[in-house]
Length: 396
Image (tube, rainbow, N blue to C red; front, side):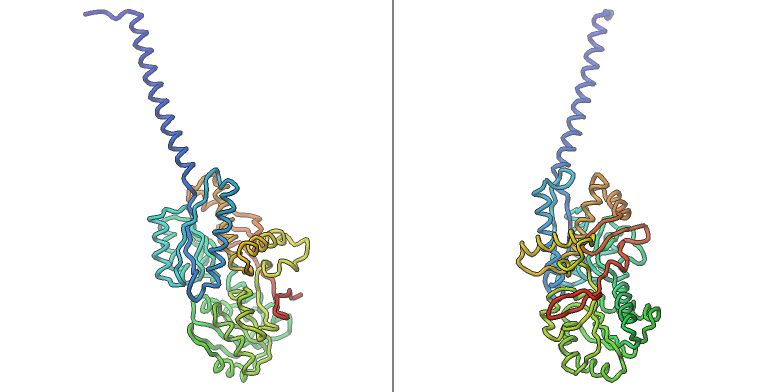
């Protein structure tokens, strides 16, 4: 048997090391290519919104806002070197459609985060899916059950219906009124806000002397308002959103009611004033600073944010801004900030970053979230507004 020489042994060792090096380089190249490919993959922002149907005046500005800012962010280079891709569906306000689209976003489109859910009903249809899949979900709807009890993967941007009740009752109290008549619609938001108002009224010394309801397709509420007229009420609160509150407002004047009328933040848009016409004069409601950006004090921390958003939206779409578009702006920015903070689109890391959001100044207020608070707004985020001469004014 031939003996291996020292030189041959060294040559074989060299070849072995060279082979290992080549394999290592190949693996490194593969990893780099995979990383590069991942870097080129867009960050997918999923959304399902009520762009058509009875809640279109909410969903339409929400979608426009998301499209506007996704385009702007991409034009500026994207996020973490990756472009954003908006994957959107119109649920028309139908909860079953919303559930179907949420499932599609998670399982087929494989989105990194969901920013959507125009109404409480459509949001709640998607909540179990987001929780089961472990997908961060930032809702744009208002009711308390979205975040109470706290759900691991679910967050939201608008003020809650409970906060709206409390802000209204604080104003009622300041006007030294105690007897309030309640009228509400049959939708998910309406029912939730009615329930929350009933829970917190006693804290403000408010007594309900009437509790009337109307259906989603009702076009006349004079019967309910006539009952309220004879109830001894000193003020009236309509817990609702959509077309109903505008009908209530017009009928309110038609039956001769002149008591203070309060509406929910669910109608905080110029569309409500247009639909209600002159009957809206004197109506009060709690809303975000966005609606009165031009008359906010110069030192208000929200003024730069809401003024910039308003200008960009109105310049682009030639239509009035609404708080609902603002909710979508906040949802998108919170998601992007969380992705940046996490350093990736890893869903668990993004969720954790959302939950630890502190000091985000948005259109809805200053957001400080925690493990027990997946909204992060307090009552100071609401401004009490009054309609005067067809325009919003701040109640001092």
